[in-house]
Image 1: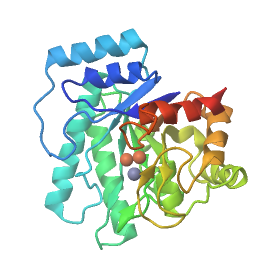
Image 2: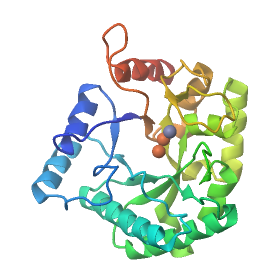
Image 3: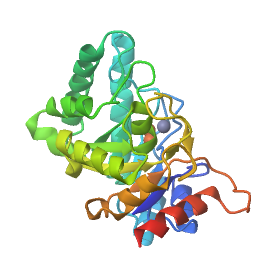
Image 4: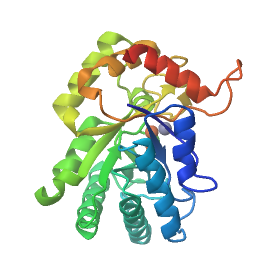
Length: 285
Ligand code: FE
Ligand code: FE
Ligand code: ZN
């Protein structure tokens, strides 16, 4: 199941229409401007239109990506509070739109240290899952490249966060693995063999069943660079073998695999999304 991160300019439903035009099976969206804290409440007519097209097109596993401003690991109480409130709004928007998955970068400890940051994230998530318990959205913690003090660049860190979630809310938490980010974080996925090893490690530390979303991006920057720069599939430091393994593993079959590669037109005037999707589909069958 393949999707792409697409724009909601002109209305949330436009991302669905564009995904359909590009022949994707699903889509990832921001449910608001990701560079702003606040947003106008969703208009009931806009929700209706979004649901109408999602149902018509059969898009079940739609993914939302939370704002980059949110930092659930923040040591500064004002920023932490603002982040928790901001994320609760995002969860509510997903519930209104019936979007099942909300991806978030776990957060950056900004000098407070790894343990303190993870503690903050756990406190935030327990509060949020409790506050939003009437909803259905699953929060997916994304693997990061480990840029600066960003947490989530080791599978162990994500496992620790999940271990801290109250038993009653555990079913609402999951993981999103971003291929570009894990390569930058130091997980070798440059060959068939090393990708299989990574999957084994992921399954051992987190559990493959907990990975509800994949982000499929190649990487401009090399293994272990801790720099997050997305590249077209097969044209970066990861290469094609990794995506071949991931597209053909039956355990990943019905999991959304979302492209976050650069947009625009390839030299042959095709949409880059069309080209990248064609590469992935050439493996999948
Ligand atoms: Fe992300
Ligand atoms: Fe990503
Ligand atoms: Zn990235």
